[in-house]
Image (cartoon, rainbow, N blue to C red):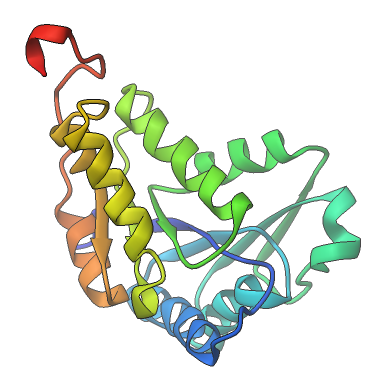
Length: 196
């Protein structure tokens, strides 16, 4: 039985240089739909955003897009989704996406994707939510980021318990399985000198 029934996917509004990103983004949408998991995403019809939405829609999945009005000209709203919510600001976009989602997945992307991912993992670290947050490491895209996060732990700036909150997998099937089994840690965020 699915504990997580609605997942927000953060990803690029471009396709990237490797065709595998688009193929895998569409596959993510297909797997979510086949698993009965609602897709919540940034509302665009271009790039990896469009691919993940189209993948879910092709399998009859429910897709909710949330897009700020000022981005319509850049990301081009997807008019074929189940529900499209237009908001005023990026803050409104993230707030509404969070309200609709029970879990978070980041696909390959740029600064915007990373900002959204780290805001959600930080909220979890602070106890503001208990949602699973996953990183889909398509074709090793996030290898260096994972290394860097592990370095934070080695340097005593991130607790290993908090590091474990970031679920990582190479396939969407494995990541969904990890997300369905996730239990939020019951540890305080702050690291005291005597704990290092």
